[in-house]
Image (cartoon, rainbow, N blue to C red):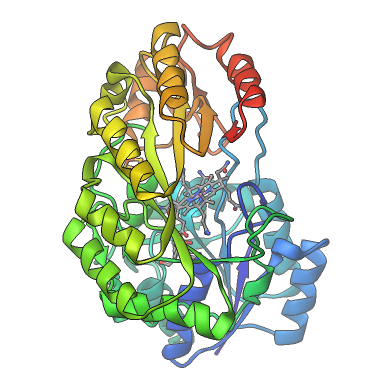
Length: 432
Ligand code: B12
Ligand code: SF4
């Protein structure tokens, strides 16, 4: 059975990400014996035509379409990516009668909305390795797929999402297949050094309950870790086999669970690599011992997901840590010599002039190398932010949130975006 996996992503904000999800699923499908071909439309100037051309060349029996980003989460300069994904789906439909299966992070947040928008029948919600392989087996056998765990189905005017199956524990599947895409094409910010960056994942899931975040929807709340030695081997292979000099861990909380992180660092240290890597840390788990080991293992830069510098806002966003913990984490990281990226997510419930000032002043005082600023909170279904926005009348019951919708507190709405734009323009390393 021939399978074509397509990545729809053409967004170049932040960096050009290697399509890691597809590389994971393709590896699992190949291991199960399927003939898999992949198409990343990131570098395509005519995605519809390229899709059609590949379909005609391969004549796949099933097409998997990965939808990563719904929009760029920017309330002031929003880009909505689903229309472009629909064009790809339309091209696929025009060239093939094979079933088209949607998947990916963006799709998982809005499964039925995406199926409806793109006029498609099915998709897999959440992790794809186990489910996609099971779906292929059923399609190959001509068996019914309707009852498959984690399947979103839109058929004959009715639609439903089946309950999820058990988590695909990362250890059960092969590592992402790095031969599928030319790693040297995946840039840091286009045109900037280092010339290319590889991404990898050591764990999935986040147990935290930040009121706005869709990550637990995508990855689940149960943290599952890969065998540390295998992750270190993957890192070593990126350096030795692909010449990668900077790798980026995509894990939401690289420093949790701490004992696992330390074990992973020890494994990386034992590989004696020259490659450097970056990771995302939660201030709550920034123990000195863990951070020192990370440094020793080649971690050059960290993103600290502080989001605010105001105690009140940290509480209203349910970040689970305090302003004091943010300060301690950044100070310790500075002493250890990390390049530090902090974040401000402004305009949430309770935000006002005073709390914005507290956040801005804290960032100026701590002076991380970079501050990523977001104004307005993108409202995702199922998050607590969704319920708050409904309660406050920011959105209406039943409103289709696939179309980018943001929460910005009434006290800050008129001035916050232009104010932060001006501030970011005036401070090197601050980005809105
Ligand atoms: C790490 C990360 C980043 C890093 C990327 C680093 C790198 N080198 O890759 C950085 C910080 C740069 C980044 C930037 C952005 N990101 Co980001 N990012 C993530 C994060 C945390 C993990 C992504 C990842 O690599 N996961 C690991 C891989 C293996 O998982 P995966 O791709 O999801 O694939 C699995 C499943 O989705 C599924 N699957 C995937 N494809 C397919 C296809 C089929 C057919 C099937 C069946 C299944 C399937 O199976 C896979 C394996 O289990 C996710 C949130 C999350 N927890 O998922 C957000 C996330 C993907 N990002 C998001 C966004 C919006 C962005 C930005 C637009 C933000 C911005 N304005 O800068 C940019 C866009 C970047 C770009 N150019 O595309 C959103 C996307 C959805 C949405 N809301 O629109 C997410 C979901 C977070 C969120 N807030 O909701 N991001
Ligand atoms: S913001 Fe970070 S810590 Fe909070 S739920 Fe999302 S991934 Fe977890």
